Length: 133
Image 1 (cartoon, rainbow, N blue to C red):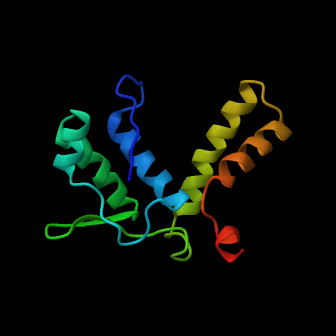
Image 2 (cartoon, rainbow, N blue to C red):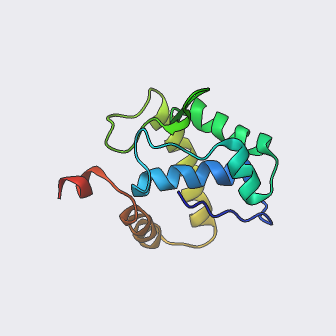
C-alpha cells in the first residue's frame, strides 16, 4: 500500500493515515486479510512518531476496518464485498455526509454539481456494481 501524506496539512497526520487506508480499501488496492505496515515502519518511513500511527490504527480498529494482534500485526478486516455495514454505521455516515454536502452548498455548488462530483468520486472506488460486471 502506497500512502501519501501531507505533513504540512492542517489535517492531523493520524487522520490522514486513517483516511488513506480507508480509501485504499475502497479502491481495492488492499483487501481483507492484507497486512498493513507496522506502526514503527510506517512512522520511520514518514519520519513521524509511531504513536501517531498507533492512533490511526486504533481508530481504524474501533471502526471495524482493521484488526490488530501481536503476532500478525495490523491486517484489513473488511472490504466492500464483506457484507452489510456494522451496526450504527449508516446513521453516523449520513451525519458526516450531511455536513460535507452542506459545506458544498454554502460554498456555492449547485445540486447537480454536487451529485456529479459524488458520482465521480464513487467511480474511483470498488463497489458491488463494479464487482458484478
